[in-house]
Amino acid sequence: MLALGNDEAYVDRGYGDRANAVHVERSVFFSGADFGTPSSALLQHFERAGDVSKFSLYTLAEGRSRGMGLCEYTKPYMAEKAVNLLSGHIVDGRPLSIDFYEP
Image (cartoon, rainbow, N blue to C red; front, side, top):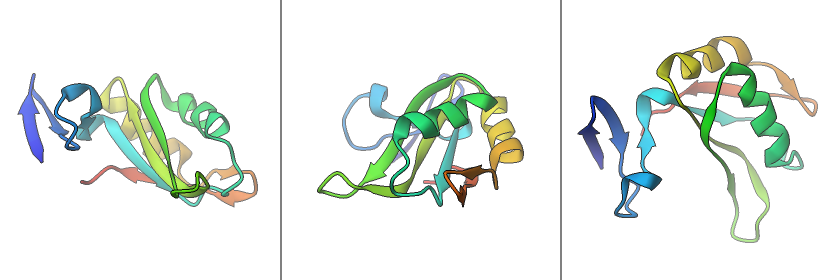
């Protein structure tokens, strides 16, 4: 569900509290990561664009990486910087695709 609050759009992911909400204008979706790349290495890569407030690497039920995820920054301009600066960068031999998050 898309909601508005404090002049920001965010997506309520169904957990009932805003702590788990995704702030659309501050978030990027990424894909193409190697399944063996740890989330800590990916997080470090995304921190090049600014302060990360939330980071999640999507996993399968058994815990294996799906090679994609979501990164939320503290400011919208940092998400824009990530898309412009980091998309296409090679991490562990694979190019990352990074774009603005669209629910």
